[in-house]
Amino acid sequence: MPKSKNKVSKTERNDQPIKVLLVEDEESFIEALTVGLTREGFEVTVAVDGAEAIDRFEEGEPDLILLDMMLPKISGLDVCRHIRTTSQVPIIMVTAKGEEIDTVVSLEVGADDYVTKPYRMRELVARMRAVLRRIPGENDASVITLDEDVSELGGIRLEPDTRRAFVAGDEVHLRRKEFELLRLLMENAGRVLTRDVLIDRVWGSDYVGDTKTLDVHIKRLRGLIEQSPKEPQLITTIRGVGYRFDGAKR
Image (tube, rainbow, N blue to C red; front, side, top):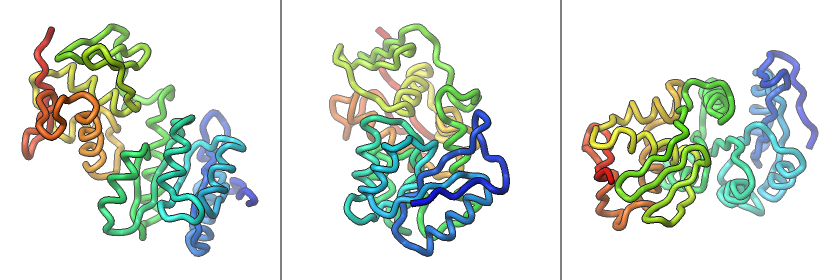
């Protein structure tokens, strides 16, 4: 598929246009999004099915992927899983309106955010820019700066310099946001952190999604570090407020 060139504004990083891989099979959406995103200054490449999406990604990694969940040949979820085996490129999943399970699953397989159809171009662009500002390595105050020491609490050991995590001596593999969330909770062990504080510190003050993203990450963390995730002893829920890490310091 041909690329749409940047003709209007300068949405750039390192003096280069931001390259967006748009994975969508509905022609009406493709045309509207290509025109709208090009006007916003993005450089757009289109893939119309899951197999083509993987090919386009592997030809040259884009800066961001806008990925529809329902695709021919390979589903959006499977495309996301495939990409996450080699890359942490920002992925925004597009899900059907009202399908809550779709949004939860999309976050669990590694999407950074999601939007539901139909959506407004302004909201979509805002989410795209917010996700791009949270990329590690950028000069972004919304990303937590981790100390280089080792944290150990409640049988959990974190090594911030290498972003490795261990539970009872066994390594567990945490995604970037999961690591940041767990570290923040451990640093404030015994204190209740509100949902707003957690989202603001981990996802950034410019995050425009809802709190479901936080809930999904907490659920996954519990599955990785708790002996009984359905009866959590380390990360406890304070109803109507937020979460607290209750591990006793060793």
